[in-house]
Length: 484
Image 1 (cartoon, rainbow, N blue to C red):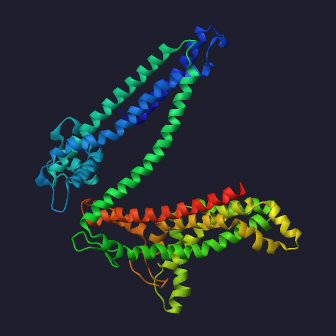
Image 2 (cartoon, rainbow, N blue to C red; image 1 turned 45 degrees about the vertical axis):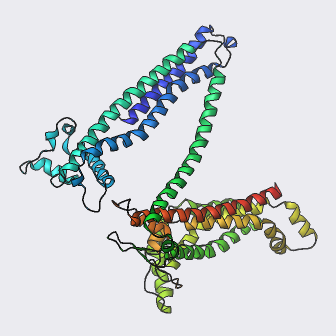
């Protein structure tokens, strides 16, 4: 049974339980809510929660556990001789799962019940065409195809049992909750405890997700450093990965490109964003501010792929034709300067909005005292307002820097993919995030250093951005403690 229909049925049972629970307790109280311990709505919610929550909990656990169990049970159908040189059993299983996702569409539901449905002859033109359209390697990898059939059958059986167990549990919860309904039942206490548990669960999920991300990066990075020397990774100046062997995986060119592009972006975004914040908070009238600030913040809502296309089609050719070629510094539209300027445009609302809020938080008494002593408006801004808001402005800049370091699409389309160390801003370079995507694209062997290096790069980037965020939050918190 599809998960969508299971969720829909459980929600319908939960809604029915709400109505039945509320109606049952009102009938027992003979329509007088004063005889009840809690308000009638709490009795309905108690039944609805007992109906839905256990079923949804089992559903989530099942959806996480079922693929792991199926992978382990189906992998035995793949003999060792079916694993080509340079592949692992995990890669072959990934191929089998992809085939299984399209197998039932290409062959039909017969694949679940009749193994001979996979036996084709060259005269079976129609089904051969459907299999070729689905890009299934039927004639070349029969072992993988049989594993895909077993994978599909196990998934079908698992989905069937998932529906039976989930709906049975939901119905049992509905009956159990209705039997507990009586006027003296403490329904409000039950509902509040359940909601408190949900809130704690949501907080735990956020913490567990962060811990899971960190641990996955750490463990995979440890596996990488077992295969590749950490000295060559952290201090190497050449990046030439080769899945055939002989790779040089020095991260310094990638780190240099990341920092170079980020610095150019900040050199453009910080002055523009800060001056815009000063204008909006100190000079603009309320009417102008109501128009200018939303207009600037629109930049934050533009997808980064759109910025990347803007860099590729417009900014890159302009910089090449008007600066790089006349100065003899380059002939490519993809360059550090292109990506840096476009990324700077993207960062303007991050700097301007936060700086504007921080400048507005400076007490008006400081401005009044400066003006009362004879300072002009501009002198008050330079000598009083900005020094008072400086810790918060620095925090805004650091938060924008962490955003710039993690950007990918603008760099891919605007800066190219050349891993090199150069001071020429009109040459193509690349960043850590771009190479992470490149190393994990396609069917890769997760036992090779060329793939595992992506996790080491990710851990390096995580530590870098985490340090910036912690420093920024420390400065902002110090500022808030001073004025709040």
